[in-house]
Amino acid sequence: MKRPSGNGTTFIAIALAFVVLLAPAALAGGAPSIAWSPTTSEGAFDFGVVDTGQTSSQVFMLSNRGGSATGALKVSLSGSSAFSLRANGCRRAALGPRKTCTVTVEYAPSTAGASDVATLTAVGKKPAARARIELTGNGAGRADLSLSPGTLTGTNSTGTKLYDYVVGTCECGPVTETFMVTNDGASATGTLTVANCCTPHFFWANDTCTGSSLAAGEACLFELTFNGGCNPGDKFDTSLDIVADSGVDYIHLDAHAFC
Image 1: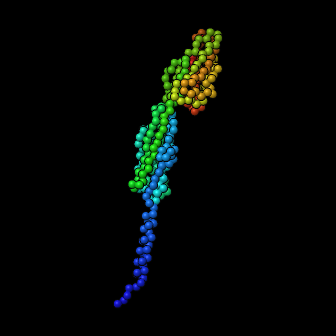
Image 2 (image 1 turned 120 degrees about the horizontal axis):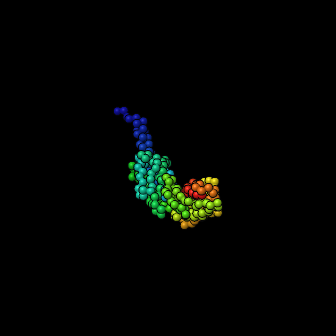
Image 3 (image 1 turned 90 degrees about the horizontal axis):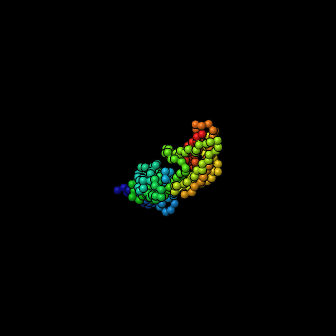
């Protein structure tokens, strides 16, 4: 009888040893481990105080710090409707180890003084692939300027208040009116300017508004003077705006005078 060759036995032994070596390596990667960043505290991100009517956006990165892939991801945003998911680069992504994806969340508070809370969650097909971050934000009241004297006739599409006022009737001499601008809102204005004034026969002076920033409840003054001709029936018009360095046009005034 022919004895079996030693080569077969040697091959089997090598193969078994290779499998034994591979098995721990295959298991060494471990489970996926995903997390959101940035954070302002552990497990949370605060958008801070945002004026009502304004928005603040933040890009969040989801990172897999584990040793295996997540499987297809599902991202959801729950809680206050002031938060919205604007871009989702993680949708159906399967993050391998050391891989990332991003989403963009927008915060748009609608109520002054409101405290809004939402939760951003990512879940993969593998049970361990789960991450969440709590989102918070607060709505601040916008500055709200009023003018006195003057008749408020409406508000335009950009939020500018429209005022109308008759300065007076000139009888061969100047007529001056002092106007007060008051911040009736809940937050400060930017630096103000009296702009786009004036047409001939009108000028403004003693202006404490230009260069000022009005906190809630504060006021400033300016004078508007008409010094027209003396022809009965003549009518003169001018306009001016109260604007901030942020580009906000708070007030538009149309002023009129007669001879």
